Length: 313
Image (cartoon, rainbow, N blue to C red; front, side):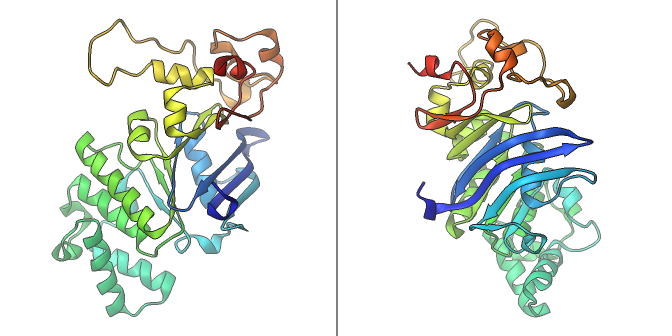
């Protein structure tokens, strides 16, 4: 990406609790109309990183580092106007007592100061853009299917035409076909507006189908970051390679038992000064256990591994 294409820039992001960092020095960039996937095991820090972009970290968290949108620091005034969230649980994001169309209209009136009539008209149009008929705008969330509720939340996130959309596991509860349609629609609508999309997911098949770049997180740090096709075709970080090796084959042909990463991810309080993945890595040396690797450019991506140069040879 050229500097002019970069919409979101994150530099040295740290999020901690009681003096212990859970997100540790994360840096990445997302271009206009681009989809970045945050990937990793549960507890890797994906959702906390995504929420920090929006200023939605839990009470008591300390945050440092730079989050720039269009070259300017993100502030609370950007919420709802320049940045938006597509949450995992649509029911928790929608009011059960108000029609869906009214909820979108309220968002428009709150942010843009539209009249009630204009807001209702624009809300109905926004729902239509995600495949919900105008008549359904007067329905309540419980009258929608799971897929329609997620489409409604998507419409609510996009209705004010934000520059950045963060989607935190937005389709986990949906069947694969509906999931693919929702993610395809989300990407399409963001691309049409030139908005950046940060997609939090643990599903590498979703990453392959819908993301341009990926950031693989482990123990609150980036293990590997770069173009999806390059990372998936030839992972250089041992952690990324381990994740890919544990997936079933795409052709469905039976094979021997899938390899699994040994051990478990460390908790933030267990981290030492060395590589966080060293206790689970077959290639770890004494140097790995005492010196934390920093991300460095290699083969068109950034990799945090002392052995990555050997992998790329």
